[in-house]
Each structure stands twice: as structure tokens, then as C-alpha cells.
Amino acid sequence: MLCLFAGGLYSASTTAVPKEPTRSVGLPMDGRLQQGAALPKRGQGYEVMDITMERRHRFGTRELVQLVADAGAQVLRKHRGIPLQVGVLSRYRGGRIEHHGSHQNGRDVDFAFYMRDRNGNPAKPTVFIPFDKNGYSVEPAMKYRFDDQRNWALVSALLQSKRADVQWIFVSDALKRRLLQEAENAGAPASLVRRAQQILKQPKESAHWDHFHVRILCPVHQLPECRDIGPTWARSKR
Image (cartoon, rainbow, N blue to C red; front, side):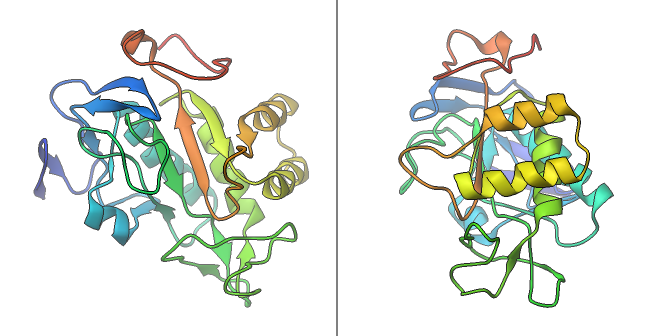
């Protein structure tokens, strides 16, 4: 089925890729997006949250949109259950989004955490829910558990994806420790664990205890118009 979006047509069952290449211009906190690719409402292993659809904040670079679809599908293959819940990406042409300091040039995306209910069943959040160091939801109090297995599977998929180079995964220090412990429990390769230690980060301005915020590096072919801030250790040559 074909549907309209601000830049043309896309297939509801596939990742939307505009005819002209997307371009990320400037910095994530001071930039714009050209020919933004629309992330369809649903895909294999992911679902865009309703508020993101309503506000039309579901656009990104081609690399970011493909990364989201790829990571959601990889987690689903390993762990059946509720699909990855996707929050804010960017506007079609980028620019400022209310209550967000970045997400301006198509290289940022927010994900709700995978979680389980009191009975251990996968649960679907409709909003971002904060979790404490013990993996219990703060609000609503102790109603949900942080799903260590599936959240680590997501981090692992993002860091190993060939779709884009992940620069940061912002998350609270307490949840980072849970993720690294799960990586060890799962027997993850030492090189992957070291990379996760590097890229999982609690930013100074926000604890990120209620969602993942993922940022990818500028693709090489978009430099120098696209600008990174901070370390670029993860950049490939694609």
C-alpha cells in the first residue's frame, strides 16, 4: 500500500527512501535535514509511537531510518514479543523540536525501553517510563521490570549494524551497569562489551532513565556539510 508523506510516497510495509539522497546538515543541536526519509508506522520488530506520528517527528537520514528497522527486526528474531517502540526522530526538514535540545538534523532517535509486567510478560509502553538501578519502574511504582535481555539485544544490534555508525547511546549510568552485566551474562564478545562501555553514556544535562537516545555519526560522503560533535571513533568508510 502506498501512502503520502511530506516528501512524496512510501510503502507502508517498507522503509521509506526518497528518490534523492537525504542530507544531514550542521549539528544535531543546530542543523537541518534535506529530503528526510520517513520511518513507516510499523515494520518487522518496531512500531512508531502514536505521539510521534501525530507530531510528524518520524523523519531521519536514510542511514538512521534503516538502522531503526534493522535493529528492531534483529531483536524480534531473538526475542519474540512486543515490538520496539520508537519515539522522536526529526521533522521532515529538521530544525528545532519543542522540549528537545537536539534531533535537528536527522541523526537522533529515541526508543522506549523493552519492559515486562509483574507476571513477566512483555509489556507495551505508550509513554517513556523511568526505571531505577534495580530495574523497577519508578512511575508507575514497581509495575514494570526493565527487560535486561531484550534491551541488551537492542544495544548489541545497534552497535553491530552495518546500516550506520552509532556514536552514542544515551542512558542512565545505573541502567548502563545493568546492560553491561547482561552482556557478560550472555557471553558477549569482549570487543563488543568494550565498545558498549564506550558508547553507552549518561549525558550531563539529562539522566535518560526513561528511554534510549541514539545518535549516529555523519556518513563520510556528507562531510563537511554534516558536522559531528565529540569523538568519532566508530566511523566507518561507508
